[in-house]
Length: 142
Image: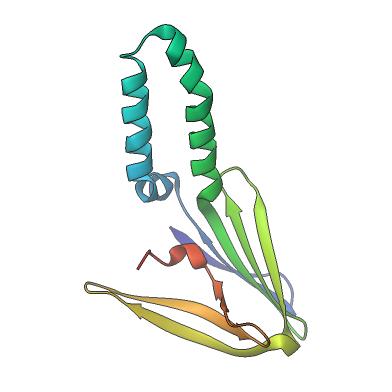
C-alpha cells in the first residue's frame, strides 16, 4: 500500500492511497480460494454441465473485481469542500462531494477491536445521520 500527498495547486490538495496487486490478492484471498475450488469441482463433472457454469464463474470474478477498491483519494478544495473518490479494479470511479458549508466537523476516529486499533478520517455532514468516511476500504470489517 502506498500513500501520497499531491499539491495540484495552491487551492487544491489531494491525498491518495493506492493498493498493490499483492494487497488486492491478500484482501480477496478467501474469495479467490473459493473460486479455485469451484473451478476444480467443475472439472470433475461432465463437459456439458461445465460449459453451463462457466458464465456464472466469470460473473463471480467480475463482481469480485468490482467490489475491490485499488485507489482511494481525498481531494481538498479551498473554499469549496472535500471530494471523496474511490477506484476499483475495473477502473470504475465513485465520487462524493461534500460542500464546505455542509461539513459540521472533521474527525480522526478510532475503531477498537480485540487485537487492533484502526484510525480513520470521517466527516459529519449536516442533515445526515451517517458519516462520510475518507479512505473507507482501509477500514477492516469489525
